[in-house]
Length: 214
Image (cartoon, rainbow, N blue to C red; front, side, top):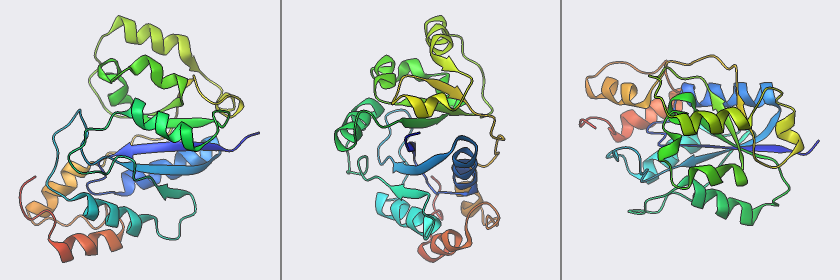
């Protein structure tokens, strides 16, 4: 069985236990050998926050220090560039074999609007989609639902046996932690130390990252 790697993209503003615990749970359940954290400095689908990309990267490095499961990709960290998943996956495939199995991790809420992503149908040409549960309002799109249904598998072992093209819904628990909630907590002077690693909490306090409303 070939080594399965996964890409976990996001703002990570800040990285928290919701990200870390979910990634570790997925890795254990599906036998993922490496999870590549992909911080996006300028996501096309959400408002950009005030935190610098250098601070976000520093917090990620602190959070995953000495954890061999994780590494960081800097493909989406250039300032003022808009990054699209399809383009990033093409770059990653140039660096690794097209025969290696690769997953792209997204929340079930993001899957509901997947049809709005650039060249969304082509993404399965470069990776699997690994879906984790998130609370969301279901949005009806017949074309997307047919596409999901036709590509969904129910045996996670299949993700190891081919490089791309499949959708798998994980049974990981839904973790109710959000970066926006954490930012608001710091802004209003509320304690968030239980929601993220203490070393990240200390960095936020030292740098006073969220003292202005984001």
